Length: 436
Image (cartoon, rainbow, N blue to C red; front, top):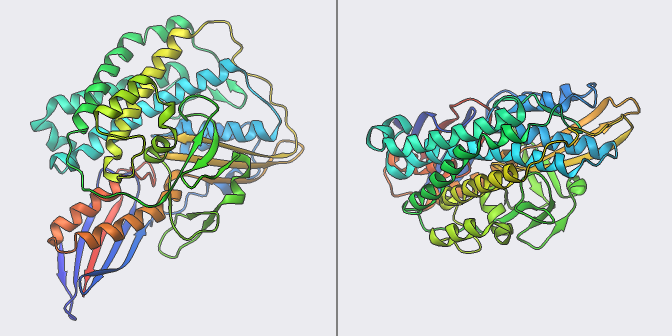
């Protein structure tokens, strides 16, 4: 909807943007053909998870924090487990770490499939949503739903259910799945891997605006393998530090136009980026040979700084997660203990994992009885909010001569590049463009 202002300015409003999680608003002010202000206005009420974690027992964060997100509950569970185990001085077994990686692969599979096929692909194929796209491209939507189901099924077998898994605990799991249970998933995983390879080839044909981000990229990097459930922090600026020092590098600040905090890196005002582009750029060498071949075939180099090509990187990660799932399933042996004891003690612990949308930091302070005295959670979207606004400033100015309708769609597309997760809701954005 377009409104003309008395001073000759113009306001463009898109009342609700679907295909993103959460509730918020977007404000773009343009004067004399130049963008003068950009605000990602997140008006969803604060949920206060950090507040009501205080006073809870050290064993409770995996179940409580999982409720932060229905799309990526495993990310919250495992970041909290790592932080509590760090505070209590506990190291889990290789078998537990392997099963955590497998469950996390299930989350990557279902989340990436949801984003690539149902949330982002309509932007490239010219549809308002997946329902409209399905009328002309039913095979594309069916492929996405098949892949997503495999991820959900994997989470159910390992985690007890696909949403807010119930088999996760501090120190490991309540029970280990059997080799028979895991190998029953193999045919579906193999079919999904074939679908994922086809997905990379499909999204590689999408027309993307030509632009590269100058922002700093940040991701985890483990001792071996592609980062999912563990690792230290690395950046494209050449920095490297342990997760337990993240509060020395990442600071959250409040901005008046958002109920979500913005994150700053090492005191800089310039934004930084977490998520698939950062993971890929900083860990391309850790991908499997198949994933690297797919990336090359799709036209990706060892780095990718075009946010519109994030859909291609997600598709490559989707193939990697399915291949990794098959590797773990094939190597799984029965008999490993499901957990290790985690006795309460006073301490401060830090944990971070790679959620589908980027690095997720947790910090907890425990007293002698294991009661949580302080909690801090820094999600990927908080870290990406400044970079989303920075991208929009550049893009809106580049597209300023477009009609209000086309400019609105381009801005929405630029936001969906990040797959921002403001909450588990399906509607997010009230887009307003003022021209004067």
